[in-house]
Image (cartoon, rainbow, N blue to C red):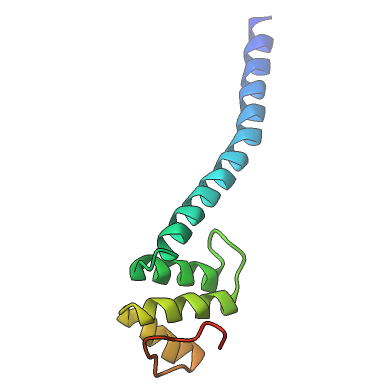
Length: 104
């Protein structure tokens, strides 16, 4: 009887973990993305670069080259040299000037 109880308890724990872990991971991803996004909209060039990279590879968000390009341009306009290199290599935008028009 004790073995059956132990097995049932173990099965219960596995079931609870199987339900809770994906939800916790999803919440962590959302919190992490929102934290970076909020810093990026505050003109933090490093966080703009990080957000662009996340969009480019689809990490913690849906992959979007349009959003990646937008945030690389923002980061480049705020002095991030790596963003400038990526814009030139990946998006064929090799001259970035301050005051970039977001509608382009």
